[in-house]
Figure 1 (cartoon, helix red, strand yellow):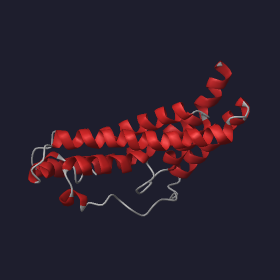
Figure 2 (cartoon, rainbow, N blue to C red):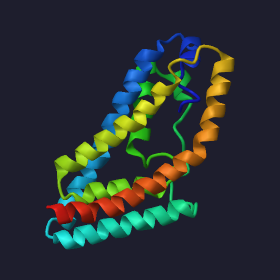
Figure 3 (spheres, helix red, strand yellow):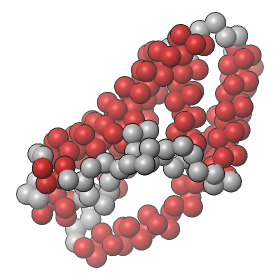
Length: 196
């Protein structure tokens, strides 16, 4: 989405980037909160009666599994779609900003590149709480939506090209972050259970 909603593109479309970005971030938070609420609701139904030991075991297993999948670069099941870029010329900026943000904030309505996304929603379900699931989802949406803010200083086409070159160089780092996050989830759960 960073290739479509940036200051240069918004200026060319006669829009204010800050306004579009605000709706994008709000949409991402809403999308994450909706999926988190669904995951938490499923958790209430499915995991409410699980013992703490089972929950810890599931978190460890899922975390290690996600780390292995991402570490080996195994392709995860994913919708084969991206947001519809025709919205950029068809709708007002707040519509495509919020709409794109919502879709990307869910983590699962567009291409899924990492098992860590599925791990996140499984962890939200394993909380066994609608409120906790919604909070996890909203936080995810906020972090994912805030990525758009990294283009805010792009002032010209050369700056945009430099920005995308930097992002391409950081792609391997993003993969390592996904693996590390999954490993942290797998190791923090037992530590929290022991501390409680």
